[in-house]
Every structure is written in structure tokens, then in C-alpha cells.
Length: 154
Image (spheres, rainbow, N blue to C red):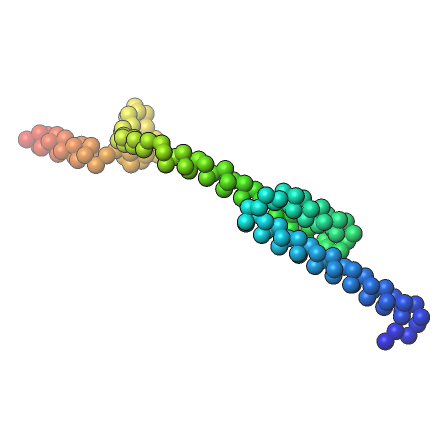
């Protein structure tokens, strides 16, 4: 318990401020719930409810009841939900048009062409060149080298 007269008065002030601040915090929570419900249900007055909520959050943060960074997080969360709902509404007409449109034709796949040989080669160039060659080319080269070796020995 407080000993001095000023400490007793300060207890009254803190109670009063606590009640006022908790009421403001509760109001913000209620407005956020109303706004998220309006966004999910896609009601007509979403924009007005959202503006009212953002305005109240700014006021409460300005008075120091909630931290400014918390206020910005809350506002950001609400705006992302709102923007996401707008994108979904715009995407629905496009999906309907896509169903009516003709099916797209698929492109033919093209095989990779081997790289050309260079006259002056470094170690890294020869390694990359070997990797890019196809299996059939490697087999053909092996056959050629074995034929050359057999001619030399004969």
C-alpha cells in the first residue's frame, strides 16, 4: 500500500489510465475482427471498415497505447489480406475466359547441339566440351580411334 498522499493519487491515475487503455486495445481487436470478416465475406463496405480500422490504429499508436511498430504490423497484415482478396476477385473473370479459350498447342522440344571444337584449348574448355557431347558422338569417336590404332599396328 502507498505511504504518501501523492502515491495514493498516482494509484488512482494508473487505474484510470489502465481502464482507458484496455478499452482502446479491445476496440482495436474488435475492429480487426470486423475487418477480417468483411474481407473474407467480400462485403460491399470493406473499404470503409478498413479505413476506419487503420485510422483507429494510428490514433491509438499516436497516444502511445500500443507501440508504433505493432501498429504498422497490424496495418500491414490487414492491407495484405485486403489486397489478396482484390487479386482473387480479378483472377476469377480471367479463369472463366481461359476455360472458354482454345487449348494451347505444345512446343516441340529441340535437342542440344554439340559445341564446336576450338583450335587452342585450355583444360577447362576441354572438360566442358566433353560434358556437352552426346553419348552417340562419344561412341563414334571411340570407334574411329580404335580403327586408327588397328591401322597403325597393321
